[in-house]
Image (cartoon, rainbow, N blue to C red; front, side, top):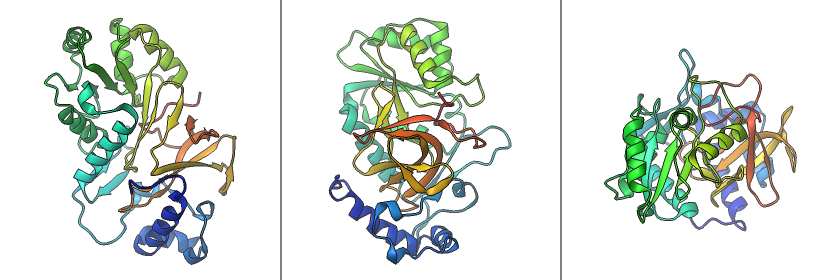
Length: 318
């Protein structure tokens, strides 16, 4: 998979589609209901994308294997959550590490301070599993999780910010806001990474409002963002401009809101994600996020579709 590039992506994606169309029972049934003959599809824009809502009601699995673990999405009380069966947890962790280091360099260049309340207070979070792995791989005795102990976190930041390693402060939106409202910090030499999610704790803000406030309070010109979700094995990252870069094994295409089989260029619509790392589940996901792609292959998140569930990985429409 890591040999994939722009020239061979479509060919690999088509071959994976044909395999999953035959060996992923729920996806196969979905295609049959659409009267789609997989053997006649030989282009990426001909592949039907699988609605993400099926992860809430079905076991999405390609082939016969016993899950090593199961990731579950967060949600408010009474909300049905997504389930992503994982064949190999170690693959997910190593893959997440490889994706991060592609954009930011070795984890050993950082002290990783993870501010993830809500995620730490439940089981099955892919984000918690990823951050626990990052913390261990950083090989820093100062890396660690923080729940609501802001005093200890502030003391740690002050002690580390003059060192040779960079601080990577990674947090959910509401927790970073809580910290920013409590104290002004000089994080001009650090990376602040938000991963979205108010979790019903606070009023939603647009991403621009969030980033502007955090930048002012943390004395940093940009706030970075991670785009990931329970149903995907890979992540995308934004280095503060609002546009997410994708690793070579991912691609985003934009669909027409009222016609899921029609695709758009330079216009806003629903986000479809191809994640080739999802070879054990389904690699072709129709999300409930709104966005737009750029000519350079990056994408922008504009919000959520009307009437879709509140998702942990996104902010409201900007």
